[in-house]
Length: 253
Image 1 (spheres, rainbow, N blue to C red):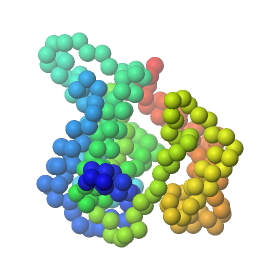
Image 2 (cartoon, rainbow, N blue to C red):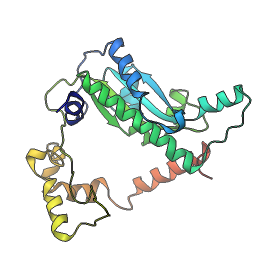
Image 3 (cartoon, helix red, strand yellow):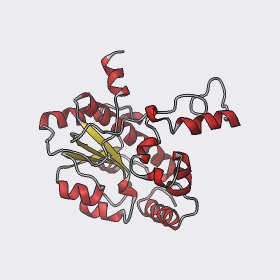
């Protein structure tokens, strides 16, 4: 296995247990330069990366604090400004542009995580940016009010312990389809349900370590009944808030 694959197969999350050790400016620069090498549509790189180094700000806005945080936003502002500077028309907005820019942003963020891992730097992705009033992110980080949307935050640092969440992943039926799509039959569904709770695979069991097993014996029971509880008022409210914001910033009518 080459070094690139070793890095990819060693990817893991650090949940809130970062030490006080700081990332060097050189390593941060390498991570950012790697992030912008990610594939993107039409060489437009329709995203922005906000670097945050204030731990108090990280904790307040991202719920976790490490040495640095990178806030990845899909963003057309630079492209719009460049078009105006060159006196060219430029139309952006709508669902298609949102999806394309979101993909660009996600690819950049994942590339940053891989680069960090290759340098021995731990990380945590968090979608905390979508919880609560998202407008506070626009105010705090001076984000453009149109055609810019926070996608995800990447916390970077060094884990203070060896219990990082190095979890297994599904890689078989239901996820990978050869030649044509295949819906799982009952026996395959049961095998997958059981796979989540295999200790050695450390997939759902990571949540059990946090006390979930006191109420639920299977990870997927907790996942569906609690974490993805249907028709919850919280979920409905978040959907309304994000939908309203996407209208306001110009991505849906």
